[in-house]
Image (cartoon, rainbow, N blue to C red; front, side):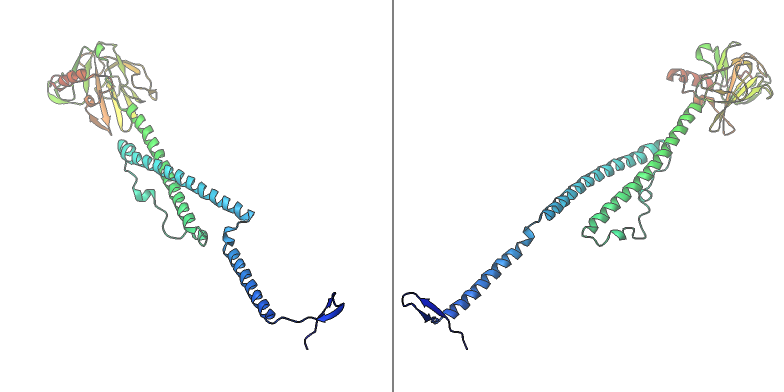
Length: 325
């Protein structure tokens, strides 16, 4: 049974029954439906715009992410620069340094070897930016590998340069008697007439005619290994071991200025011209050995002769005259 409601009518001073108008319930119903529809629409608009509504924390995270992207771009540029510089060093290493020191270039495979096989980046998988992280780590690993290989290569080049410097200093490359002290260049390397037997035989060195007591100089850096007259025909003589297979010999000396075991530099005074041993007149007999084989000393006078002086010496050395020992 529906409840009956009354209201107080002040004009009649009595309570009157509240009469419901027809259609009121229907109107209220439709208004309720409209209200719910509008509320739902508003909620939908709010929901759809939630991604664009940022909390302070989200704003801070967004700024941090943007900063990370910026830092990555800077890192990427630095890596590109490092790769470019390293590539240039590698090119010079292979095409200049190693060519100069006559050693094999390092292959591309060797410079980038060691990155196959197992997946070393498995721990970096499964993240939103895994591909980016993995590719960056690969580039860094390759760059580190290249740097290690190039560092070892430069160490090797430095060692080769040091050895080359020692070699250049050791090679007997100057004339042992100065031009101004020479009377003449008496005999060269090759077949000559023996001064005692007059028989044609091979002369294994070069003879420099000079007055007795003329200074004789070391033709290259080395160590004195002999200072004696116990070798047949040479008389008082000196032998210097220059290393790298080179030995120089200075024979028919008047006296010595060095001792066995002493280290000398190119141009050091080691003795004086004489006529000791099997010698016809005061002169220096000079020989060079390479790997225990006698070679022509004429090929080694680039250290103290001009082009014209060398040309003149070459002509005299080729004359098949009489030797002095």
